[in-house]
Image 1 (spheres, rainbow over the protein chains, first blue to last red):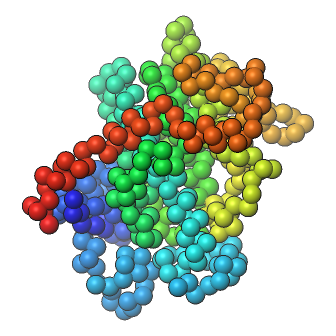
Image 2: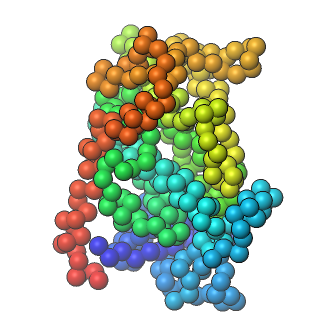
Image 3: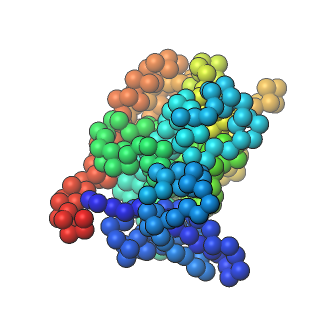
Length: 74
Length: 316
């Protein structure tokens, strides 16, 4: 199966920072939403979003840990 | 290529340096982390079929929901472990679906059948407690940043599993009679099973890469003591016999049986009377895997190929 990696961002309360909470593999965006909501069910999140990992664009450096840990910039 | 030598990295992490990406890792660090994460992820993964097959003994629909909530958590924790492994160059596809049952690295305890509701809740009370002891140490001390952050969720949820186990152990023992007997019977085989889970005694253990690279801080014996410090008082409080007690003079918990010792798989009994065996014998038993190993792994892997074939091409 060809799965896409998504990073999951969430915040517990209005006013909190939207933080990186984890990652899921899914066949498409719709499935990724379901996987993220059920996989990271430790909080009753105020807001949760997913983004395809390949869509994350480094801004100030290409060698930052977040980008490097994910196989570097595209 | 790591900017550090092995010795430099070991020194740095003990001074508080946090590793964030694979290219900061030396080969030794990466190898030690792969071993640690593989054991962690495999343990979470194999707890799922063990708990899932036991959840059918749940006494009500609501209880079954709680049992399945625990299974959901365990699979999510496994996902975290395998994703972290993928980020350092290992293949999740291979680790979950490409290995033979005997190649998984989970403890022998999760190769055993859980045959009634009492066994499931004692597993939550004992095995998940062992998980908390191991992972709390990692959470507090690991030098690998992505793992530390991921464990916030794991720690929170394992505490719920433990509470589930303890609440039900209390309820069943309070009822007395057959219910209490079943809990005692579960304690009789699961207590030594968990003690063994923590591995070789420190006196026999060779140098640990995980301690050297500050992937954890406590030794096997220290973790065993941590586990007993909460488990033995719990058993005493519930009127259950646990084969260990606090020794005033030594200032630690001591076992009341030869350790390690033989285990009769079919009968689920430890042969305390047969005396102490060697750790080589234990490793041989572990390597041979337990009675549910193939069944549990097959239950995880079986549908991957079929569904993959149905979907290929449509989603590419």
